[in-house]
Amino acid sequence: MTPRCGKCGSGMKEGFPVDSSRNQPRVAQWAEGAPEYWFLGILRMRGRRKLPVQTFRCTKCGYLESYAAEPAH
Ligand SMILES: [Zn+2]
Image (cartoon, rainbow, N blue to C red):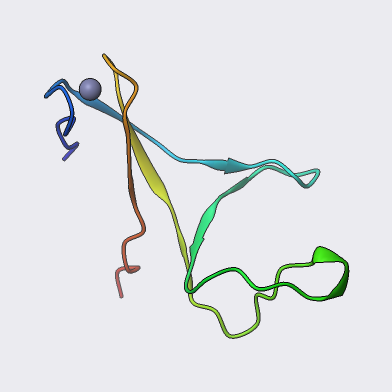
């Protein structure tokens, strides 16, 4: 079930944000909490909850709406 655009009411198309900072593209994830860094600007990710992000894009105005749903068990 795709949502309707919250800005203009048009239909939205399913998609996802891509993390292409590595050689292999991956689905970007939502991470819990504010970003904290190690020395040299490396993000501290230990102990953070992470969920894959699903993003819908309005086909008319381009508005993005993202979901990081709990995985189905
Ligand atoms: Zn729209």
